[in-house]
Picture (cartoon, rainbow, N blue to C red):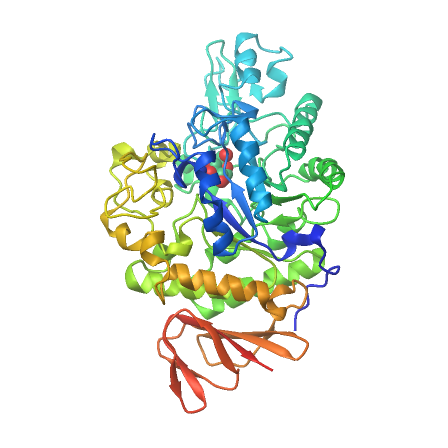
Length: 543
Ligand code: GLC
């Protein structure tokens, strides 16, 4: 038995066992028919999310932005981009969300601004050594005439992480050249983001998802990594989560969060922050979490687990053990806007969908908080065949890898694309949905027994109501099970809920765990037990 001891669950602790639904704003719901999702669109669809049974929404960036990186290039941190609406739309949306009992988490992008941000345009307009440049990471190049980048750092999106400007200096951008990295050793940068936090907390947001939370501090002297794609064929980014990079996970980054936490804590109602952080080990990742830093960090190891019992068991045990150390429950995630959807990761087609449904039941039975990505409740696969000319991910041009396939607008209803994404009669959507999505729309799945949407609804309903699942602090008890089968139970009082996942190649008999509550596939009775099909999961209850 591994225990994730924590304080008793209070309203301020809502995030500890919450189910958070990630809204990729551009692709969720379009209220004005321009083919782009917007805040009013979200507002109209809030009842759907309440009925689905989630506790909170995480909204990807909707700030003023040239949209070079889907809004992760912010030009004004205190305003809404006209393509998404207005601040008044935001206020109306959050008011309605709160009235429906849904909390709102927004994305904060502190590692870099857009190159269209007033600070960066001022930095370009002034010369080397100016106070305006000091807010970013400008440096002289190497070589006789400064014609080589200051060091060997590579952009996560491919190519060098430095761009040279007309006067000869270079600036750092760990992502696209349109996303210059801020200098977080500069007091004005720190003061600015503390103020931005307050701006949105004052507007009622319940939390922040911190983008590239491991990136803000760079090692002193900007030392070389020591290998590059050119010399080794291996991209530096492949070290993420495996080795140390001088531009990620530096110890000083924690000072920033220790300054932010008192700000969050000074507001009522349990305002929280979740880190998108990549660190060398689960131990280093855990350092982002705690009573004086952030509340959560995504467990990407869970997302990266392969379809095998050993793989899942290993990451679950490690994550639960770390949770015990830091006193905060784990933050599970299977899909997001940067990763291939889990239906496709697990094999695509019917097999991928079966496995994805089982993995979702596994995730939702674990102690801690779970993040869902819009469309996973519909069993959407990655769209692999988008025409290249429609792809917008800046990484695509530099690496050939594109995240657009998980960002295709949600199918809501109807017979023709974009399936109710916009208002009646609207034919526009910034990325086209495949014809197969007609059968996957919300309307097509609502009320249909066995549909993925109804599976999620049932699982979320049980998760909320069941005493053993509502707890965040009871750990899990692994049960003896055959090879390729995961089985664990959670107990509250005299009620035990058991989750069994069949990752073996043959149906397994499940006996003695009690009555099935929900299953990702059809169970058939056999004697006193049930047969759990291949690639399926079930929750069973015993008193
Ligand atoms: C994060 C976001 C990703 C974005 C990057 C740069 O990883 O999730 O979408 O491209 O940061 O801001």
